[in-house]
Amino acid sequence: MKKHAALLAIVALATTPVMAAQSGGFVDPNAPASQSAKGGFQPNPASVTTVKQAEEMKDDSWITLRGHIEKQIGDEDYQFRDSSGTMKVEIDHKRWNGVTVTPKDQVELTGELDKDFNAVELDVKQVRKLP
Image 1 (cartoon, one colour):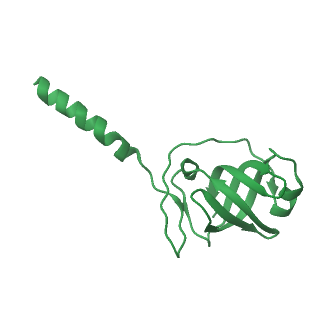
Image 2 (cartoon, rainbow, N blue to C red; image 1 turned 135 degrees about the horizontal axis):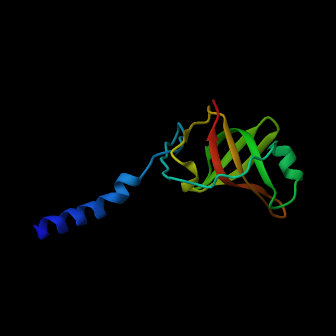
Image 3 (tube, one colour; image 1 turned 180 degrees about the horizontal axis):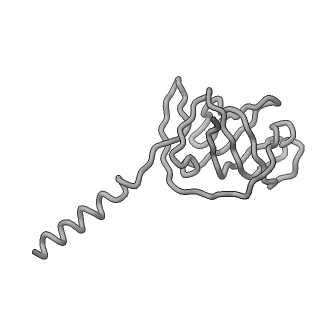
């Protein structure tokens, strides 16, 4: 009886990570990629900003952008576009929370602005697919 209980415990521990995995992320029609994550940070609502406005804001500003993710340009880096321009956004795999988007889907990205001498990037904390 103890052998059965021990075997059951080992099987349960070995399969837990597999059962906990969730799919989601950006799907590029030219090179489909699957991301997975569960849970995430829920920020306070921020006013919607455009890419052009974000370029003029201070480093570490908390902003929300609405537009489209055009393509994946790195492991966690994407090109985002709204009506005012484009911006590089970094979306950690865990931030997708099971959401799957394509370039046709409108998204809302909330995160922290990261400005260097000649580059502006959004470190995304929340991804939301808009209807």
